[in-house]
Image: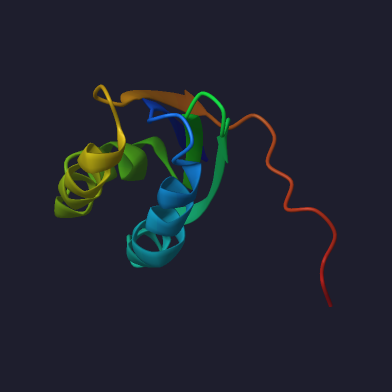
Amino acid sequence: MHARLTTAQGRPGEIDAARRLWEDEILPAARQQPAFRGAVVIGDPTSGKTYSITVWESAEAERASMNSDFMRTVLAKAAALVVSPPVQEAYEVIVYDRGPSSS
C-alpha cells in the first residue's frame, strides 16, 4: 500500500470548515476512487494547520489519483479554506492497522 501526506495551512479557528469539507464532500468522492483504502485527517484548531493521510492500494493508484478529476475538484474546493497551496508527499505504507473489529 501507498499513502499521500497532505499538509495544508488553513485559517486559525476554521478547522470545523475543513472537517465538514472532508466529511461531506472529499471522503464520499474518495470512496468512489479505484484503489482508495482510507484516510485520516488531523488538525490544530488554534493554528488552522491540517494533515491528511490517504491510503491507496498501490503506488500507481496513488499517482493516478494525483492527476485525476477527483484531485482537481478536491483542490478547488479546499482553495477557499487554505492560505497557501497544500504540500503533498507520497510514501510507502510500512504498517497499517485498522484496529479491533467492531463486530
